[in-house]
View 1 (tube, rainbow, N blue to C red):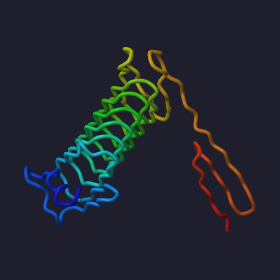
View 2 (view 1 turned 60 degrees about the vertical axis):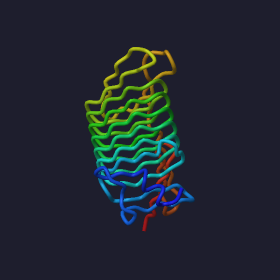
View 3 (view 1 turned 30 degrees about the horizontal axis):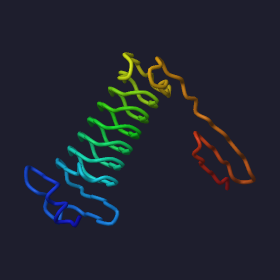
View 4 (view 1 turned 90 degrees about the horizontal axis):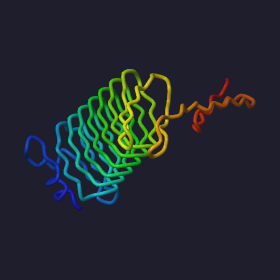
Length: 195
C-alpha cells in the first residue's frame, strides 16, 4: 500500500490524517508519527510496525510491533510486541510480549509475557509469564483461578488446565577477565571495562 492508501486507514478527529503528519515505509510496513488520538484500521494487514503518540486505538492483524505513548487501545491478532506507556487496554491473541507502564488491562489468550507497572489486570490463558509492580491480578481463563501477583516475584503460569504457577529465578553470572567484568542476567550480557 502506498501512503495515500494508508492515509484512508488513519483517522484523527474523524478525518483522514494529513499526509505531512506521518511517514509510511511501504517496503517494511512501518507507520510513524508523533500525533496523538488516532484511530488506525489495519485489521487486514500483518507484520506492521507502529510508532505513535498517546491516546491511539489500533485494530490490526497479527505479528505487529507497537511503540506508543499512554492511553492506547489495541485489538490485534497473535505474535505482537507492545512497548507502551500507562493506562492501555489490550485485547489480543496468543504469544504476545508486553512492556508497559501502570493501570493497564490485558485480555489475551495463552503464551504471553508481561512486564508492567502496578494496578494491572490480566485475563489470560496458560503458560504466561509475569513480572509486575504492586496490586496486579491474573484471572486464568482456561480454569477458574485468580492469582494476586507480588512485586519482585516473577512467575510463569502452569500449562493448560493445571492450577498454579512456578516462580522464575533470575539467572545471574559474573565473569572477570583482565580489565573486563561481564554480568549475565537471564541470558543478556552486560560488559564493563575497568580503567
